Structures are given as structure tokens and as C-alpha cells.
Length: 484
Image 1 (cartoon, rainbow, N blue to C red):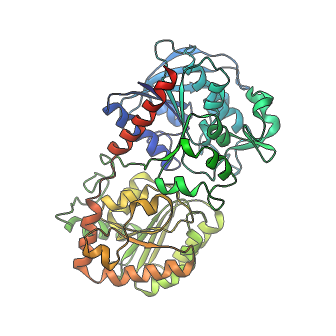
Image 2: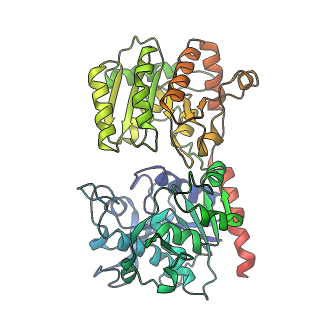
Image 3: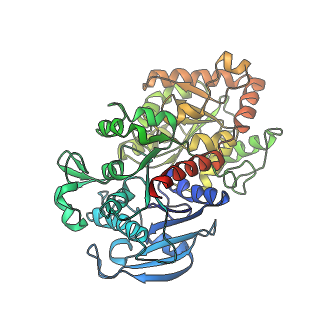
């Protein structure tokens, strides 16, 4: 089978979150199973700089308010897989965040920038752009690629199967209704049964309505998004499409995330954890934290938003510090939360440190050097950082929600006795529930043997892409009989 993955970002070329990691790891995992997987990406500066051997496939011409659009084909720098790139300088030649302008607002023409992404996917599916390679299945990721299935559905002669993956239901790609003139969408699709969403257009709803199959990135999140609490106004659509919805857990590329990776201070393993202490000392030195703290070193590698529970963590921070623990934060997001963590670092020197922004190698050093990774999310489709932390013997402390519930086993007495515990879990989205579990983790830390037992159990977990890729292949093959 020939599978085209359509996405707005991919590690290491352009990354704002876990989507980039998934798009970089899933196609190679499918290729290992014998599928012919390719990727379609917008020609953002980082993509054009990082691709290998880019050559033109065809000139598309002036479309979507761009005077010059070409389709290029090259290879991804890490996996070597083929990838198409849409070269449209007027739309994509912008440094910085691929979605947000320097003033902090969304780019005013995002509907055209990502509408073009879906449009090119559909025309690749038609065989018009590269007659030498026509996908059997187009797999679109998140709202940016949501129109791919809608454009494919406009041509009933196309036999292409379509799969749409929700990476985060909160980002629905909502634009003014009159944008349909720029997108070439027929009026009959702009209804509540189509892509209309409260008087506007939703790219995500287009993907949900017009794709043959829908997936999301964990089994628990697949259930949650069918409810008003987590459905973000689209829960009715999800219930209607329930027979076509599945939750397939994201995986981890263990060639990148491993406790002997070159970014960390010392190598170690589940059978020899000595190097982890060296990583902790190096991390404390890097961030100016005291090496004599009596409690564990907690870490955050996250967007600093209320969705991620960062406001709860700020409120719980005094309780964490009273336990003799420390906190290191890597991330960016809401200005008030960034300011709150900066202030906490300024008044707690030696015990709280913050790096606002993102640094890939620093994230590896934090995973290796921390004792506990905090992921107190209000909702979490899958979460990848807790999976990275497990491989490094850093115990995740998470809220029981979405993929966090599917991947972290709470350190209860029963689970410890069965040697199943891999971290700490709490239920209620409150500062008090989070504080209580932080205090439990600090008390547990004093039992070195029990702590090492949970570390070893976490490091033994296998969240590689092998099982997930097999599930995706089965999903793709389920579309084939209908197209025969």
C-alpha cells in the first residue's frame, strides 16, 4: 500500500509539539512493515533547509493567493523516507512559529496556508501532480490537514481511502465563513452536517465529517472526546462517527529517547542506574540548583498553559518546596504563567529554575537528570513526555486523563506488590490533589529501594511504534475492500 501522511510539522525540521514527533516516527515504522509511506509538508523555512535532495515534481501555478506554487520531492534527513514539499514562498516563507505571527496572533491567512496543504494532498490522490506515485490512503494529521478529506470527497471518482487523526481536539482550525471563497469549497458543505461550526468553518470538523476513518492518539481520549467535557463542541459529531473512531496510542522512537543518548551527561540503564545520579548533578549545576536538596528534583517539559495544569502547579509550588524538593521548568506559553514561573525562580534561587522557550537537547538532559516529571494536565490526548520520562527512569506524576491514564500505573501498594507501578497518578484537577500526590512522591523518594524498583519497571515498558504501526496498517487495510 502507498500511504501519504499530511502534516504541518515534523521533527527535526519544524517542531512546536508532539505532533512533529509522531509524524517523524510513524511513517518509518510503517515502512518497516513493508508499506510505501511518504509525507506531504508545507514549505516552511525549516523544512526547505532540512530536506535532502529536493527536486521539482511539477509546477502547480498561482493558487490560494500565491503567485508561484511548486511541488518538490526529496528525502527526510533522519529516516530517508520520501517527502513532498509545497514550495509557496508567499504563504510559507516566514521564520518563527508556523502558526502565529510575531504579534502573538494567528497568521491572518492561515486558512489559505493550510487549505493549500489539504488541496495538494487531494490532487496527489487524483494522480494529477505525480503520476508515478498515487496514494491508496491519505492520512491527515490535526486541523491543519483537515481539508484533505473534504477535497477528496468532492470527487466521487477518487478511490482514495482517508484517515484523519485528532492530536488535540482543542485546536479546531476555526475561520470565518466567508473564507470558503478563498478555499474553493462548495456551499453545500458549509452546513451543520458538513464543516460549519457555530457560523464558522472548522478544518477539524471537515476532517471528522469527510474522512472514512478517524483515530485519536490514545484509547481513553477516544472515549473522552465523545463527552461534553472533552469534546470541545464536537462531541455530537464524534458520537455520530463512533463506529469509525478508534484510539491508537502514540509510540516513542527509542533510537532518539534513550538513557545512553549523546545529549546527556552520563549513560545508564535499568540494571545500572549510577549514571542517572551524574545526570542529576549535571542538571542541577546547569540550572544553578543546590546539589544538597533533600527531596526529589521535579521537572516540567511542556507548554505553559492551563490545559497542561501549569496554574495548578504554580499554586502547589509552596507545598513542593516545603518538602525539600526542587523544580526545573522548560517551556513557553501563556505570558502570565511564564511570568509566574520566572517570579518563583527569582524568589527561590537554588530550588526553582526556569528556561522559557524550547531546546531539544536540554529536554533530553532534563529527562535524564530529573527524578519526577510533572504532567498535571486538565486533558491530555496522549502525552509523549511521560513516555520519554519512563525510558529515562524518571517517574511521571500525572493526572488520570487521556493517554496519561493509559500509560502510567500508579504506585499504590497493590501495584507495587505486583511490580507494576511506574509513577504517580491523581484524579481531581485541583491544586490540592496535585499537592497531595507531590507529597506522596516526596515521601516515597526516601525509600531508595522502592524508588529504584519503580524506576526499573518504568524503564522496562515498551511504547515503541511497533504495535501502533500494526494497528494503523490494519486500519488502512480495512479501507481497501470498499475501494476494490
